[in-house]
Length: 113
Image (cartoon, rainbow, N blue to C red; front, side):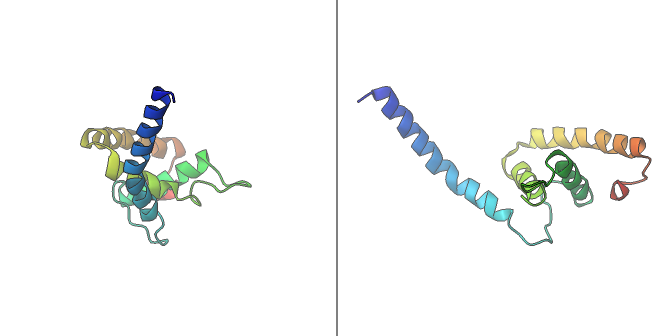
């Protein structure tokens, strides 16, 4: 038996076993009812994030981002797995993006976008 192949398979198996409970709980947390309350993304920005994700992955003959609950997944992932530094960088970059979108679109707030 090839030892390298065996070690690779053992490492992959251990990694899968270690990660599986965390990933399963993350997916289960995304299966909430329609009244989802964001943990990481601010409540007032969650709709805008959802719309952006739907623009990137629209519903066609396959489900879109909203049907797949990708905004909820991103919110849970950001809260659970990103470092405080990464969370702060995203929030710092989000503010200018949001204000720029409001200026470009001519809308006064994100609820009108």
